[in-house]
Image (tube, rainbow, N blue to C red; front, side, top):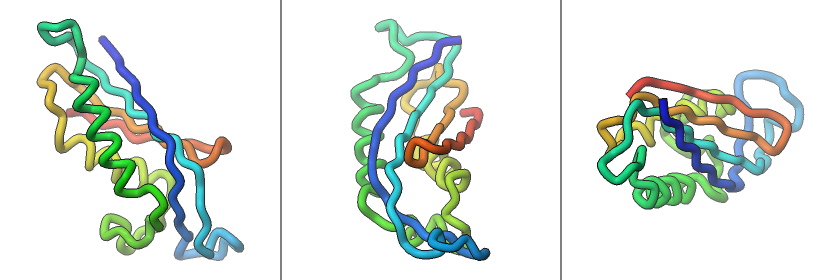
Length: 125
């Protein structure tokens, strides 16, 4: 199986809800590193798993959506704690809607919060 990984860095804010987490209950920023790992069984006729230029544009668009914003303000987080785990799934759902490569089998999102913790979400395409 072939794998391809791209990453992007950005700053976004959030505040935790539903519990007493001290300062985490108040708006605060984090430095996020998004890693997108694509899995596929075959390459296209040019020897690529995906069109990397297209994927980079999609990632830039996605990261631009969240950059310097508060996650709690997005409808995708309504009623949810904006945890790293939920954030991974939401990013996966947004990226999995537009794969333009029939040979892709899975998409994995790995999201670092600062350099202290990461979570991931993987799904079949």
